[in-house]
Length: 97
Length: 460
Image (cartoon, rainbow over the protein chains, first blue to last red):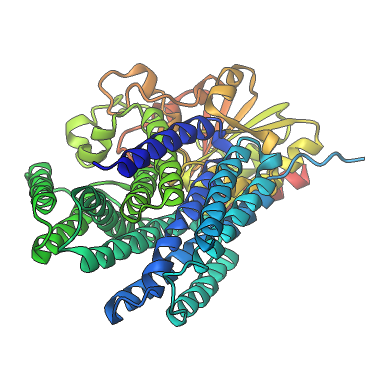
């Protein structure tokens, strides 16, 4: 393994630990928004798809990349929007005056 | 210079993702935090588009426009009751992107790929393909285009494990010698097949675990993409998604008192003849109540705890539940909602439906915080929940759900159960709660019944 690959493993491991700490504090109340939020965030694979679709490595790569861009964009746009729509619904008790 | 811009954008995006997820620990801060995470995503996308490698923009433009339209339309028009299906679809789409990127990378580099990169690509397409088909299967079951009951056959686990072993052998072969595309695509195909076969024996009530697990796989596929492309923001986002899914599936399995392995290989509810000894209810009778009598009991309760289950989601009765609760509140009663971790088809399913019906979140209690309050509860109203309130989980060692933590509904002073019929719940076992002296049943579609209850309560 190269030095870069070792560093990648460190990044993966540390991000996993941070994720565990952060996510174990999310109350069951918000578990559905959590799922759709992590879904939206993992739409970051869009970044990889963009490079694949835009690097001009031949028609097949470009087309497959285009499909990947579409799929990932649906997740990013749809994921953040629906998470917001859900979170907007969680309201406090309105005090009647 | 461009490279620095890209890396700075990725660094900021990684931080904002963590900030966003951190904000989900409180419903008051969550919205703003997630908007920050969305900003992070925008930064990462812009940071990528300025890269030198990207020379053609037409496919990118088409993909992003089409994707944005579909994504936005889904987010705006999808009813909240369809959330589990939407989540399943988006796991699948995320995995499609990861798998395709893996395929493209392999095609470009199959002859000069390093071992480290081949390992990453292998994980990427294996997890990716498995998640694509597995999530589509889960979608089919949730949408009920496929049968929701577990589908089992002889030697199922053995057969699946054999296929898995073959996939691993092919993976090993690729690490040793990556140059044969046939091996690569066979492995990918096996991954896709395994996704189908893995979800086939899993029943509707186990969906929360499966959705969480697929969430985790989709994240791991993204992280593997990051390793293959040497891209840290992908590794970080993938790791966050992966741990989140993993953590949720642990919580869900725990809430059913079952191990991961048992959910995946156990085919719960498939064979009630084996485990379904349950409590004998022969000779016992249930007390059926008219809507008017039930309404009177509910309206004059000082403390009412509503226990929603999948039946409420199916009947789309959350608004009627809230209307009834409003009447009780107006009469001076105290209303709470008790939510079991695996009620519904995905983690937090009931909370979202209730929030949609304008139930304030302070009234929603999770199992641990409500369970010792049932003794002081006048009326527990069970709306379409069954196994999560079955006392057999506590008392009956022979029961398949023995040991599963349940809501202590049986300790309430009186219990009213809204139920379609006397059919047993998903696990195929009788529920002795229904035969207890303090329990009365109101039969019928939950929504129709609740409408009658609201009507009757208004006249009181």
